[in-house]
Image: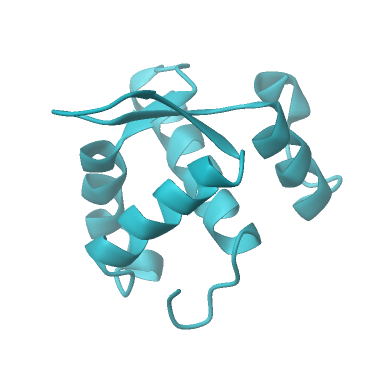
Length: 104
């Protein structure tokens, strides 16, 4: 699922970084995102530019299937929201490294 990326941990971190960036940049505290939102951020992030759009789409859908994200809207613009399982996984991955209050 991408060079050097491990499912689900790497992708949970990517989504968390996107949501954190969006919160700092636009004061947007929503826990939800669209494909377009995260793709436009990935284009600007040199660290993640190697992730193909189709790969990220598949990963987001798989995270939803596996219960890490809630798919709250379908077409024309699918909307995904992080949930308790996502937050618990993020805490496990980044134990002691992040501000947990925003994620509660």
